[in-house]
Length: 321
Image 1 (cartoon, rainbow, N blue to C red):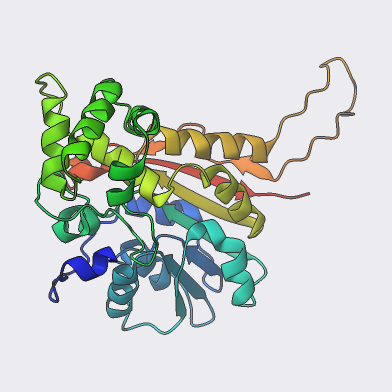
Image 2: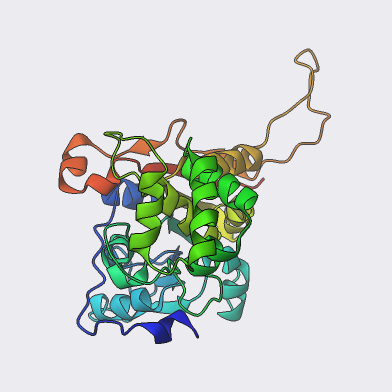
């Protein structure tokens, strides 16, 4: 039975999300009033609203999100405006989404990666280790793979690998082993039971909730947040007009590494010996990295929104010659 039929969703929930590094993103996009901009993770439309405010009637915002709740909330938050299109989809498919809209190139793209505050706080979505709900963790409720399958069907080896790589959890092998022992006794179906298993698998620590890293790892696996990211960044750059910019906010070291590597490769580098009078290696540059170091949240922003603490913003500008 699909998870969405196992529990009843609340009807009065609001998709609340404080936009991280808002001013830095808006400045980084270098918005043209008649331009076309894509928010690939529109969420509650916090960033999008600021983008639209800088656009003329000729400008256009395209908002993409894999979460239908986000799309519905964005509609409500953008009620005063008409120059936008919303798409239920994945930013990994940005080329196809733009093609379907008969749009060739855009002036700017924003990607605010990771899970939203709403998804973390809405316990029935199964993201939270501080709850007792069905294991889910799907950003897109229409997809088949959920945390229920990952926890109960993945091999011990695969679980350990995921928890170590995506959660950077040094007790990953013990946690995976204990998950497999417990699921043989009874299927693990709730966030509470999974959190309890993880907690018993680790020594006491002051480093936040003991299940935090494991839940993060499983969420990343369920939503395939890391593997396609490098190619998504390159595809997004390909969708930019000359002079267009892409701003990407990451919250995880693996996300940031994928974005950084993609930007470096897109910028390119001449490999010719320095004593040659001109380039013969034939390298091609798609543009330049605007941020030599990632932009991070200020102390003031972190005080207002603690989830901005791990945020890193990187910016790239398309400059094809």
